[in-house]
Amino acid sequence: MDYPTPTVWHAGTDLINDHHVKRYHIARDGKPIEPELEAAAYAMVPDMLAPLDGTPPAAFTVLFRTRTGLHLNVYSWYWDNVLYGKFAVGGAPILGSPDEDPGHLVPLELQLIGCVYELDVVVHERSAWIRHMLMTQAPDMDAYLGDVLPTGLAGLPDTRQLS
Image 1 (cartoon, rainbow, N blue to C red):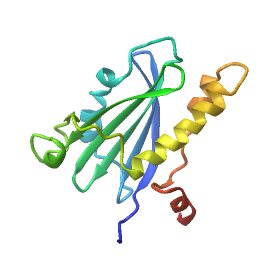
Image 2 (image 1 turned 90 degrees about the horizontal axis):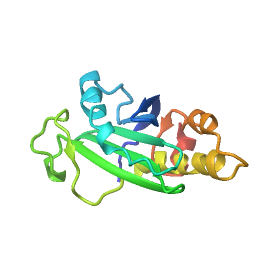
Image 3 (image 1 turned 60 degrees about the vertical axis):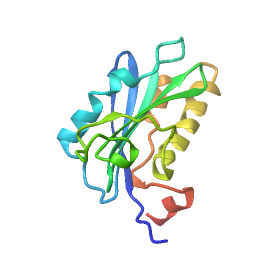
Image 4 (image 1 turned 90 degrees about the vertical axis):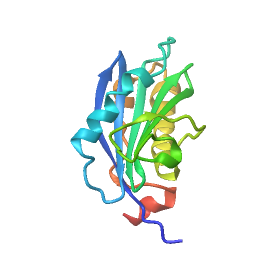
């Protein structure tokens, strides 16, 4: 099956509700996500973060502009080594969106955690969390926040070698 591999890039890091949040974007054409869609998605992030539980407050988001709409995945570190996830979708009625407007995001009710392209970010962030927060004498939030997935093709690990 010929399935075009999208591009992923780090889109910045913010402090939101006391969480350090790394932002990633994915797009099939590699073009920036439209500012109004990005704003609609990121307005939802504060309500999608895990409650503070003593784990260093960090999270990462994946905002994916697909042919079927806009997908926002918010993953927060929780209980030291667990990912807490909440998801939203806009413009994809097949997934529960009320209409085809990608800027009209609603919480995703299906029990999904991400597509193969979004999971590329999860794999990187898992390893970065282990390297900088769990397998060190003391957690190093600055090192974790600085360890971002490089811009490139998203998807299966071997696709990174194609870029």
